[in-house]
Length: 314
Image (cartoon, rainbow, N blue to C red; front, side):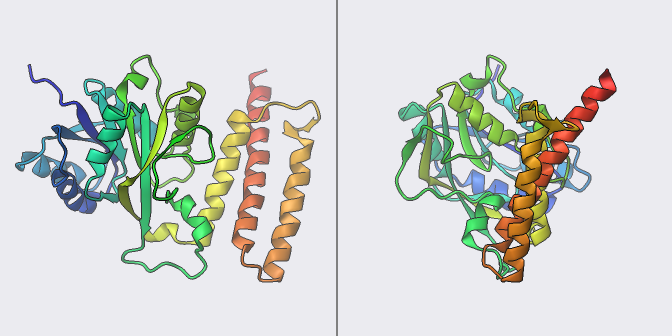
């Protein structure tokens, strides 16, 4: 029986067939002092993804295997990568719209194997190609497109002020052998927005006192799709985030109206007024302020949805 290599590079993919050849080529040219394999979990792609992956798997170089996850959604796909990687000691994760830079795998392996970290995240650099960066898209908004840059020095992460995401992260698979998985409540399907499953995973690892680190030389480039480069995308992302927070995380409060804590109405009104003022005065932070408003609206809707579900069950 073939022994699984110590390292699995695990990626979820959905309808990005054209991005797979350059991605696999970049992975296969990575230099590492240990053998590794590439794993793709195809989440019911309807384009040529299956055919392209089959062709790539037949090519020489680093072994490439494919698993098909029939349950639609990013969380079932992510959890399938976990299941398929448990025979390896380390699982490195990135997205199918990214390209790893030289040294990516080796940097992650050193952090996990030699430095003893349980989880390590690196830099994610946003690239605008072929669509240019909009003039209104300030640096303060790049984090909402998955950019991560905490400087040029490595450090251990001890709180939630410097989170790392599945856009560029490595795990010791021992973390998952006791049943830890990504939370299904935070799944999304296809090009739907929202998600948040990696945020929850990061917080779970913090709660478990796992050793988490940041390595600046563990670098990937993230190519942003044109449909995300609209102000409406940022507003919808924040609404979806607020909705899930209200639905799943915000505790019930005694002073509520239709399940919504009364203070949320005040917060939403405050953010609405600030947003209106910022647009009237053409303030540079007007989009960010409006994102706060849509997040508050999402929390209201999420709390109300939870209340309605409880009323229905009675």
